Amino acid sequence: MRREDVAVRGMHKTTGYSHAAKVGGLVFVAGQIAQDVEGALVGRGDIEAQAVQVFDNLKAVLASAGATLDDVVKMTTYTTSLAYRPKIAEVRARYFKTYFPPNTFVVVASLAAPEYLLEIEAVAAVP
Image 1 (cartoon, one colour):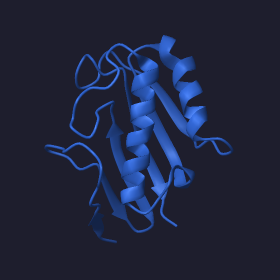
Image 2 (spheres, one colour; image 1 turned 60 degrees about the vertical axis):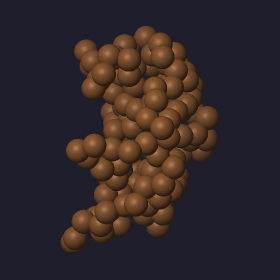
Image 3 (cartoon, rainbow, N blue to C red; image 1 turned 45 degrees about the vertical axis):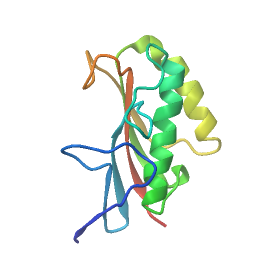
């Protein structure tokens, strides 16, 4: 199978990576962080605001690939503090109401920049 690039709309520009790629019936979404469409940080020091932006970014990338959050078959969540877990779960429940995809939750010392508190990557099955 050949990789298909995904023309992502409504997202900040990337440098050195792509927001998503499709292979067969799967969409692989790069880790999304709390950046708005202009690339500015959303929610400095605020895990809830960052989580909302991250899930909105996931939705936008998936939509560009012809998928939705309901099509997600695997997620990996990276955060910089275990204390953020309840708030991340609360925000995730706003986006996943009846189906909760498999998720691996990882606490790391740092993400790509110290102001980022959360990053989530996903794999979705394109209908």
